[in-house]
Image (cartoon, rainbow, N blue to C red; front, side, top):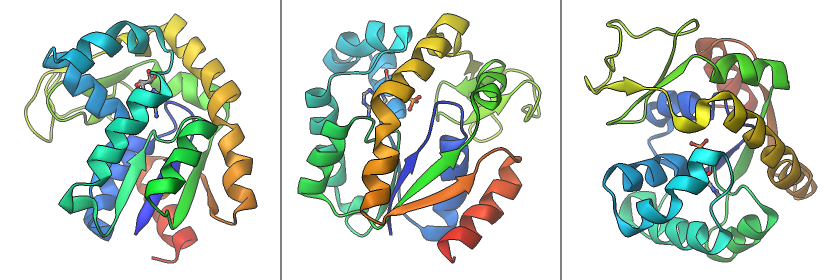
Length: 209
Ligand code: AMP
């Protein structure tokens, strides 16, 4: 099954993806996680994108499309994937259609207030990218990832000015993808406001899983 997870930052795309990969047995491919790993490893890609990501803007289409094209060419993605955070522009969506045919686009429906509440207080694992939250989903041990024992930190782009910028970027550049995919009959809406367990149930029901 080839899925796109589409929605504003903080909608819970990464959290849901981490839960449903066990159900549908496909890799979770997050462009944000790939960029953050490159930044941590100080690769040429990481050095190039760090200041863009920290400020809440989008990495250029050419770089991002090349990265996803290469990743989807790997063996584990041959029969399916969850693309989390890609495409984020119409140009990326058109490019993707040239090299892969998606089955469904899951649209995470959540108002801005919910996004701001979730991103403020979010903590992310430096090693595996799992998200926790100081109010909604605390780790068992403070500052330590439940999944892999890695160190938890606040992403630079989860600070207030960057959150505002990311929401603006989402509205201007990414939200038009909702209509783009709805017209193609690929969109499945899910209410992303409830807690993670309930969103998994809504996801299964709406996708008939
Ligand atoms: P995310 O973890 O999905 O919130 O992504 C974090 C940041 O990585 C974004 O704010 C962008 O700067 C960058 N990024 C991730 N995916 C894309 C994409 N498809 N196109 C451009 N930039 C991206």
